[in-house]
Length: 328
Image 1 (cartoon, rainbow, N blue to C red):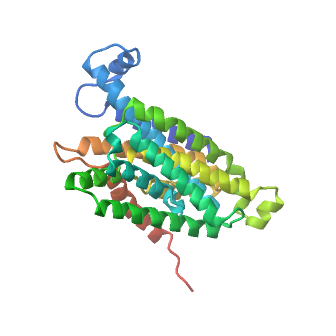
Image 2: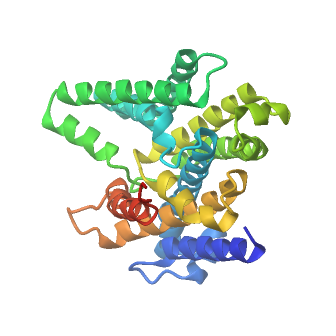
Image 3: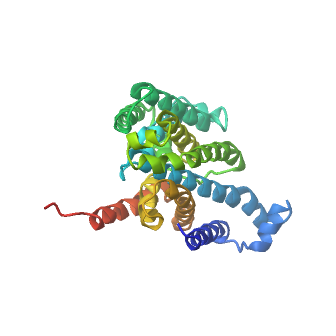
């Protein structure tokens, strides 16, 4: 991607962050932000400091993790339909959170649900690597990921089926819809290091992804350690996606749609797609979260995962239609 493209993405990211901070009622502006950052100010500065700032930061970070993960997975599997859900990380993390909610662990500690989610995501990744084996090809890894995701989804449905009362079922269902409504500095402090570590691992895979686009045998001949690359892809995705799911619930389509949109601008190079997808993913999720906040009414919240699905599904269908080829 050209320098102009990166500048446009950065402008979009900063604009989305500004909207997340200042859009809405309350007369919030830069003066209140300065007061909030200095620890002073009245109610407006406190709203910015304790509510909107951690929510905006989490929106950017989670979106960046989803976008980068989608780009890396599509490059590694050489499959444009791959997304963070294909390796079972999202479903496994969701299962962990649902278990914490089902057994009432959420009332014991603020970190019970995030810790359970990230722990189950790690277990899901471990199971994936065991099922696939140490020298698994990309196709085998996909099949193992589908098996892990299907198992986690089935167990989640079973727990919802066994929910002891409608309130417990509603709490689980609402969490699975994905939301940043309860974002706080505590959750940001938990999730941001995990997402940052995962993103760092994903960035390290860029050279290997470019070589892998020529085929596994060619990549080996160029000195790429495919086992190490596979571990970096899976571990980076687990941290980047699991950290986000742990605090925001299930949010789909960001990691699927964003790389599709940007791929022509990087000459279809898998490695060059990672960083632009992170920037665009952060901006997209931040804008979507701002929209949910502005569109939600009293007693009628609009959930972030629902909105991303409403936006992502038609856009993805349009992409499929636009790229459809006619068989001879």
